[in-house]
Image (cartoon, rainbow, N blue to C red; front, top):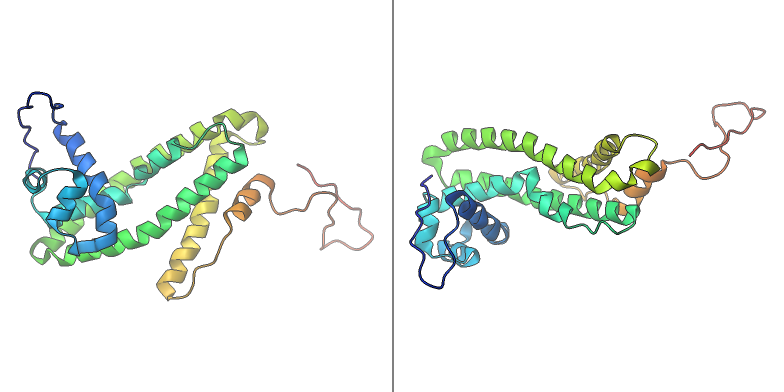
Length: 237
């Protein structure tokens, strides 16, 4: 990848962004266009989305395929969800905040299926260097997965920290269990898509209530495996 060349600022204009910040800004801007248009998106469309000249794109990225590949892996980085998580209104009730988190997770699942498909399209578009690009992409993706997942977990914990006194387990564990619930639903949807069948329609409210209240009904419950004469147990909160 070429390093971005900073032009001398003109009078009355803001100073150009540092190279790495400019790169991230471009990737954020072109992501929606690539997601919608795929590899057929033109460099003109990508430049217009980023608000720069086409020449600027190629001072930051070697070519269109390299730009698209970088955009795919940027979108697959879990940390790309951080702005949405951090934007959740902390004054909302806990259940409403968790519902918003589930919605963010579901949106990411749907878009990631498309992004993975785009990754294969981009690789096919650069056959002469596909193997090297694919391996480099895998290494970057694995590195970003670990760091990005840790950043997302920290953001969720931060959002839940004020509610810690109301939990019977540490807030860190609550965040982990929330991840298990959302990822489990996402995996079911992904498996259904691979089989070509409709994905299960999980209600976000059901998942949040499962996390907050479990599956037992309120009030006394009876062990179905116990004999009829067994005492009724009181449900513990």
